Length: 402
Image 1 (cartoon, helix red, strand yellow):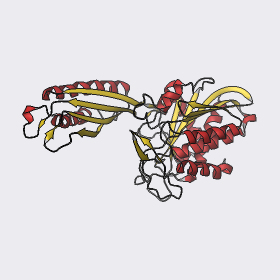
Image 2 (cartoon, rainbow, N blue to C red; image 1 turned 60 degrees about the horizontal axis):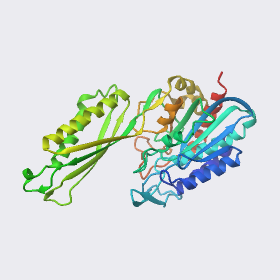
Image 3 (spheres, rainbow, N blue to C red; image 1 turned 45 degrees about the vertical axis):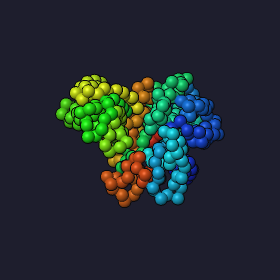
Image 4 (spheres, helix red, strand yellow; image 1 turned 30 degrees about the horizontal axis):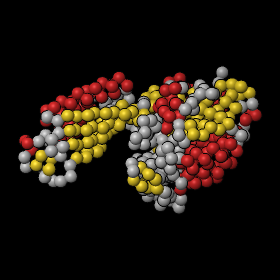
């Protein structure tokens, strides 16, 4: 598996220099599809807009397993100083923005292309079928889009004909290079986008009683939401984050506007608790608005479900990952993380395990390394062969199961 490492690095650098936003990954999808066809795989393109599915059928029938990588980049201005740093731009929310692989999806694509190369070279020895899923828009549905990449690929049949019995995926994150970590059951949070629109009545800033003050109502709603999570949810059992991150209201210092909008994110690890918190937030927001004489519109959109690692599959894969990385480098008891992944939708359809691959530069403390989505985020390229190896072994060992 080390023999193809220079090619995997070359793919990663090419993709890094040419990033594309969600549902605009046309070049990336073309690179992937051309490579899979060159390996003799059955290839479907345009799955979930720009997604690619490759099917490798072994020499003999058997089980079916899927491996997944995400392809999209972020509207981020890269500040890594790499010689192959991105200078690309794209369209986001009606504006031209810088685009960069600030989350490591370039390395994910390169590693899965490398795994496809290795596995295609073993076709004559494989019993069963391997499905390679290259997914667009993992970072969430772009504005105006009802669904992100995983959900759309499912709708377009990515998990049909053939249907996998299991699916595996990985993500590079800050961590000691060469380490692998995950946890059974809830691993990564469910992610919801929250939008709140307040409608009041505009008035002079000197006469607040002659209008309906949406500014004051907004401030109280933010504090109410903070109190809901801090005072009604046990953080030791179900980690919960409810953040209001944007507030938009007004155009002049002495005019109280008629409308205010807020948006934020809710991260949860328990479906029943999530539903109850949303219900209580809706009631509380309406009550605050009514107190001020305003009206409130509360909407919520789920970007990703809870990333749930199948318990039996989590136990099964531990020695497989140890085989790839060394037992001392595998931690199957990682605490849950409040970041999210739409791999979760795929794992709702078939049992799955999603794991993290530490990729911090040598000599750098992972705790102080730039995190995913940072302009300075980078991947230690020495880990790329390990990602290829974990993909290859998880597929092969699953097909070999009794």
